[in-house]
Length: 100
Image (cartoon, one colour):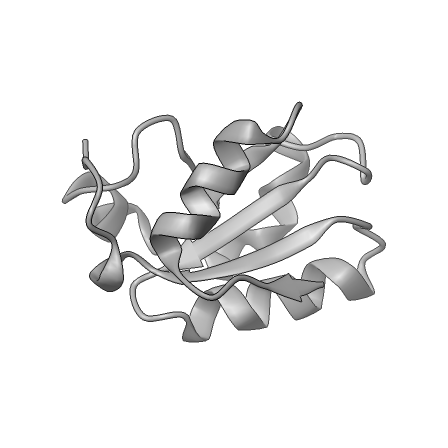
């Protein structure tokens, strides 16, 4: 697991990384209120659904939430579950890029 210093940097790195998935671990209502374009929503409370967006445990996963707390927890859980390339990019509250 790796922590990336800023949400903006993390999104940029995700876009440069072949096969990477950007994953918003906030609840669905939070996601629908605004999220990074092309992000998948897999709430922390439903993290078992991660295979819906990353069947291969080698898929690079870039996780974010609102402030960084849930994404950090999700990253730890995914590493324990065998995902090899997990990056916590923090919280969308600090993101300056476009939102959908």
